[in-house]
Image (tube, rainbow, N blue to C red):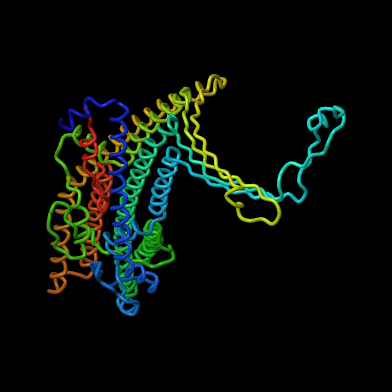
Length: 544
């Protein structure tokens, strides 16, 4: 008989139990793999964390790819400060973020709840031992006629019952033979464990995406600082030249005042850009789970990043490109992408498991109408002894007894609490269905928005790149004209400012693309450095 034929003819209860046991085994293995992955990330990033804490200032040296076999000492780190690449930032966040740690604790808590659920259907063994010392043997009064038929029935004779030493001890074994709530709880515990594991995976996906977005925000904030600083330098040089010309009588004072006003307007913009960069750095440090007081530098140059190319022309953008290409853009239809998102996204899968949990809860509430059957076995020893106590006396003073009992309890009437609990569970099930429906619509909206952002970046990128190339040509020509005595420094400064503006515009386009790509990865449920589970669980537990 084949497995499929066997399952097809199995009772529904057995098939359901097999399904839940498979889910539990699957998620048990996946949780162990994920925990091992996190521990490995923590070892790989320990050297980098030490560098951040020791240096405490601004990091500017070229970052090195972390190696799990590298045992970097504090002395080596102290002399080699490192900048953080995007993959290192992600690994630190996964190993150090508080939400990830809380998710791992939730999974561990689910492990213990599974054990608790099984304890309700496993045998319970107890033992007891008691010793009683009668300082004065209890006395009862019995009518005299009991001992003497001719005695007075109204006369009571004191009689001592008991001995100086009494011993009681034994073992009791209890086993639940049938309890609907207990059996449903066992199958529910594995689903609860699966829900917590999916919650951990969804949290990891969110943390990675949040880290990427924060990292890109630091890069674009740095570009804004460079642009404002170039504008400030240009106006300062123009102001200096204009003042010289004013002193020589070539221009009037109004030209100087105009440039002074322009300069004072630019200074606040530069200050705002610098504070925005600091805020972006603090946000990144907070996401990584590090003290926000640390100084931090990041790797990457958005103005030199090609969003279309598969290769990397500049080494500082290598990590950016690797993370970006870990989840390739799909050319599938929107409906296929949505189906993939429903299968891969941790939050949607968690909602699906919560639906199953709610169904189990309804079963548990209905099982309260069913009887419960228990069996117990009792083995007892008793002993009585006079005088000086001897542990459990001698064989003549000791006796043994055994009992076996089957108990049946049938709840006949408990008011309306059971029916009300069933109705509440069914209402909550409908609420979960609405939540899942809304979550799928939200996922569809997120996926559409991410796709639109990527398409917009691709369309704008060509124009931005042409503007950057033209600005580069213009700057080179202005510089040659100045070197040959045909142009002025003012022309060079203007051309340099135009180049900076073109670089910032292109960097903004790259930032929009990378941000949209990070959102796209999360929308389809395939986030870098988070286990990309396949749909194997659904295929393997699909029982006909």
